[in-house]
Amino acid sequence: MNNSFKTTLLMCVCCALFSCSGKQGEADYSVIPLPKSVSLKDTACFVLSPSTVIASGIDSASQANARFLSDELYDFCGIRAEVIDGGNDTSNVIIIRSYAVDGNAPDSAGGEAYAIDINPDSIVVTGSPAGQFYAIQTLCKSVPAGRFGSVSMPSAHIADYPRFGYRGMHLDVARHFFPVSFVKKYIDIMALHDMNALHLHLTDDQGWRVEIKKYPKLTEIGSKRSETVIGHNSGKYDGKPYGGFYTQDDIRDIVAYAAARHIEIIPEIDMPGHMQAALASYPELGCTGGPYTVLTEWGISKDVLCPGNPASLNFVTEVLNEVMDLFPSKYIHIGGDECPRDRWKECPKCQALIAAEHLDTVKSAASREDALQGWFMKYAERVIEARGRKVIGWDEILEGGQADNATVMSWRGSEGGITAAKKGCDVVMSPNTACYFDYYQTPNPAREPLAIGGCITVKNVYDWDPMPEGLKEGEREHILGAQANIWTEYMPTGDHVIHMMIPRADALCEDQWCDPSQKNYDEFLKRLDRMRALYDHLGYTYAPYVFNGEDR
Ligand code: ACM
Ligand code: ZN
Image (cartoon, rainbow, N blue to C red; front, side):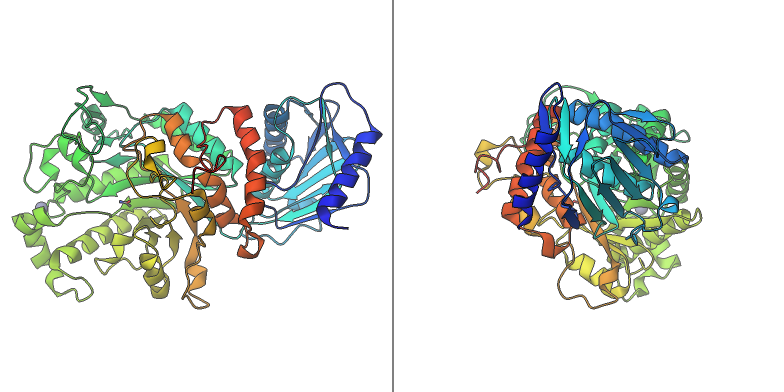
């Protein structure tokens, strides 16, 4: 008997076995991302209803997960299952257990594995705190979206774990600023997709968005621009002052909200380029001394941090230390991308540093200024490693020839990632061929809101494999995972960000979580239809193109 026929049969039996007030629904474990294994059993189904209770172990993580499950089930299908103390002897119970309680705990990939055992009387969820959380996501996505009196859940054993340990999304809050409430919504959507890393791009030429107590002008001046260019650098401006930043309390709030959902926030302070908002605040940190203004159009500024000025190095040390006080993440992102060398070539201080550090003799750098970039990134790396953290940067950090300990985020295609993995560096794959969710989503931009350009469809994302070809055993282990980036030049609102994020994030999360052997685009589209019902129910402003055939 094939699995889908068996499921239908079991569901019919289940439905005949009980009746409940309110609409009755049926669970389907074919969720996104697809679990590694779902074995249906020949027993009756579990009936989720308002008389179901949720019991957890005595550890606080299981208890938090139990409360999360109760709330999320209610939001998704309208059934409120109460969390109770104890309850292991009760029937009609969902039990959340940590590994210590379950001798058959799955051998986890990175501690994120989980198992769900569904029987007529109970559902037992087993895993580490993170594993339990992903199990809860699977359970909640399996129930139908809407308002139901009961949901029949076929008896089954589900065992699951992720393919990659790093499953990220990036959000640029510099080009446009998004309130804390939206960042939390973004985190909710990431959690729904079993992702665990939110890379927050906090600073850029067009705005500095995080309060730094030692440098108050970064937000007093650097978080505001006088106006914003209209469209693709049209030369016309909207005339409206624009600004916003997160206070340190806001950041603590966001970090805690994400941590409760097993998501680490990785802050990015982009340096030494993309720094014009900081230079507008502290002009002495630039090679020419300014004056500078916070950029009002898109693109790359030639005005960058002056590494030859000791005050700039002190700035980097103090800013990164405050950032590390705020963000407990393993990784701190120091950018490193798109840093023009024009000012350094003309700057006596930078040239003196190049001479003093013999940077003109660095063989692995293409120019002395490239070597200066490498030297600067190494300086920032020392600040970060002194606190026991790890540096991550865009793939340009390979260019200065000194980034041996850094984890490389490969964005200009996959080449940077391949080179880094061959050198023994860890890599997050984020190529602009599959992971730039600021690109159009269909070949016909006229039907879409204005975007930066390009075209990355849901299918392009789905067909992509984060593991590049051509790596040997030993090199492949350096590919930690994958991330999509949302640069927000053309996304002034949170609803617009979600339009660019979903459903490409659905495709991405299967790249991140599933083995290639599990992936099948047509089957994925069927699962996506059920996610769409959930998005409709939750009011998410997803892009419609793949659902109405406009993505081809
Ligand atoms: C980038 O897109 N500049 C990393
Ligand atoms: Zn300089």
